Image (tube, rainbow, N blue to C red; front, side):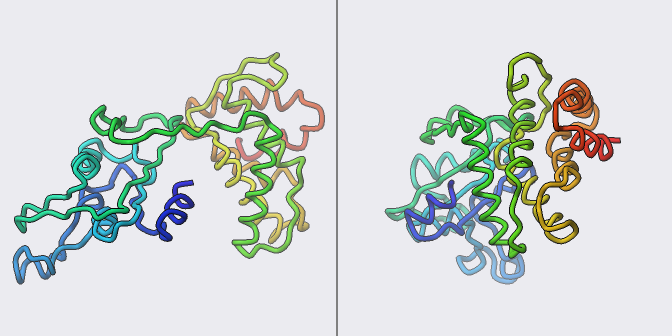
Length: 271
């Protein structure tokens, strides 16, 4: 979404800061060419622009992915940039003023746990838009099927049809574990620590598509093609999430009509 917005607004979506727990402040502000810094001291030629600084000077859109995974003290480097549209460079006794057209699009998954919450000062400098999950299973299946087909083409995979039954199965597993209950409402479930988002379902099925294309019979219909991918998406905490997953397999998947092959494949990779 952020990539498409940036490309539509300014024709460029490449000014990107990928947020991780190790993202340094230099990724938000600026860095230095240390060879030139040692030889010449702090000069404009020795300064290395961050994507944010480049966007400010060129009047373009900068993107920050997974903002809440960035440490809080690094996040706070954005406050002056967003409020004053200014980036001070005290080593040079100057500052960078943003030209018209500059802005920042940041994304975060609000289902993630153990992340760095935004400070109130930073939060109010963003216009927040919450994108809801697909309302119905049919809508989510349609989104996943369309995106898997697109990714298959972009990855130059052979023309392999993704079986709708397998797509629906992955979506069902993710939705039930995400919401903490089966589709019919009869069984309450524990939810794992992962997000189990639509994007992760797409990733699981794209991986299965590649396996079926290169090692299978050319059709994504074997549960073994997707079992390992689902296991990796569900079990993030090897202790608590494994308990949740095994309970789901035994209480729901094992008893569901037509899912016996999927149950066996999942039990085999789960161990």
